[in-house]
Every structure is written in structure tokens, then in C-alpha cells.
Picture 1 (cartoon, one colour):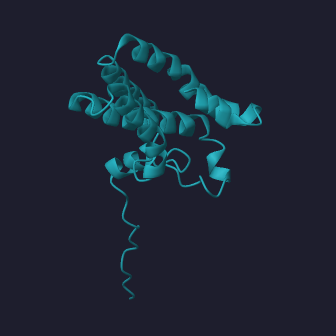
Picture 2 (cartoon, rainbow, N blue to C red):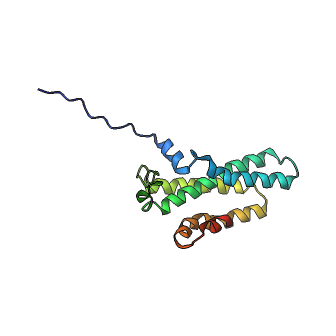
Amino acid sequence: MVIQAPISEPPTEPKWQVIVRLLRWDKPAGRLILMVPALWAIFLAARGAPPWPLIVVIIIGTLATSAAGCVVNDLWDRDIDPDVERTQNRPLASRALTVQTGIMVALVAFACAGGLALYLNPLSLALCIAAVPVIIGYPLAKRFFPIPQLVLSIA
């Protein structure tokens, strides 16, 4: 009689870590592309140091906004990403997270960004609202527009 050890599956990644990957918070370059110009702008507008609560709003708001954009991108591309080597391990493409979870994470990120935008002046709030369709539509622009970064630069 031969006794075999049970086959163990590789350890699964905790769900919170998968969500961090979905938000791309493990890759800071994308966050900095949005955060640095926003911080620079408020320092220029204040002609020095802006109030620290505004700095906090900008930092958290850019993290939430970029996260929402990444999740929306992954939702649009979830059926394409599995066929692309660079993107096949993204949480929605690899089915590590469900589409429903992706939608909920995107809604929470947009809600956080929107709530923080309420602390901004009326013009800044209007610009934040105007950016939402661009953030949602950018992934589609990649399919139909030869220079999709121009669309993203509007946001």
C-alpha cells in the first residue's frame, strides 16, 4: 500500500492584496503622474505652502482617482487582457476577482474621489466632474483612436 501526500495548492493571495494590485497601488509611477502636477498646481496657486488639509485632499484624491481609472480600464479590457502577456495576470483578466468586485471597487474609488472633490473650490469641482467621462471612456479610446494619450491628457 502506497501512501501519497496530499497535493497542496499554491497559497492563494489574500483578497486585499489582489485589490491593491487591481488599484495598481503596487506601481507608484501611475499615481505620481497624476499627483505631482496636482500638488505642483496647488503650491503655485497658493504662492507658497497651501493649507495642509488641501494637500491631504489632493494626495488621497489622486490616489482614488487613479485607482478608479485603473479599475475601469481593467473592466473594459478584462476579455482582452488574458491574451496579452503584459496584462494577463491582472486580477480581472486572471479571474482572481469577479467583475462585480471590480465594479464595487471602482464605485468606492469614485465615491472617495468625489467626496474629497467637494472640499475643492467650485471650478476645481467642476473640472473633477468633467474628467469622469474621460476617465471612463479612455480605455475605449485605446481601441479606436491612434493617439489615445491625447484623450487621457484631457482628464
